[in-house]
Image 1 (cartoon, rainbow, N blue to C red):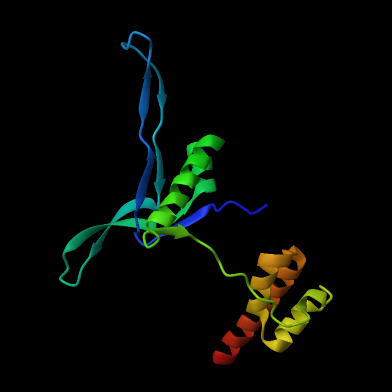
Image 2 (image 1 turned 135 degrees about the vertical axis):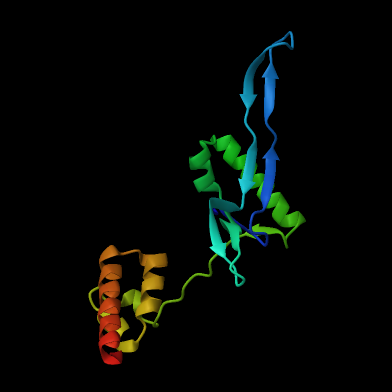
Length: 174
């Protein structure tokens, strides 16, 4: 069974897709609202606080912290308390947009990391940090291990060796 995409990307930093408008449900007489179906919006940005800064002329300017281009269905569903049906409606709408406007919205995917050396998968887990250091492939081993094997002990040992190398490089540079 193929995994359903949950991370989408847009070329626009604060792109919004209105999946469903807010709708009121009225009683039989049409005079009393008995329920409201909330709007569903896929927002490709996280809007942070406003801030002030000074430009080259010394004038004070205002800006906003906007981090965009990505939309994570799972995170949005949790944050907005969407039902499974709402989540699937958003996914279906975004997948349709991927086909209709592929330059505007697409499924975000990360290329799978390749094994840092040919025998990585058959190398004993205790030897991986040592070999990765000797071969100069610590970063590659961390990436591959994090995406594939996901062994916390191996990742921790690789990170430790990376920190030791960094500290040694800083001492040498000083």
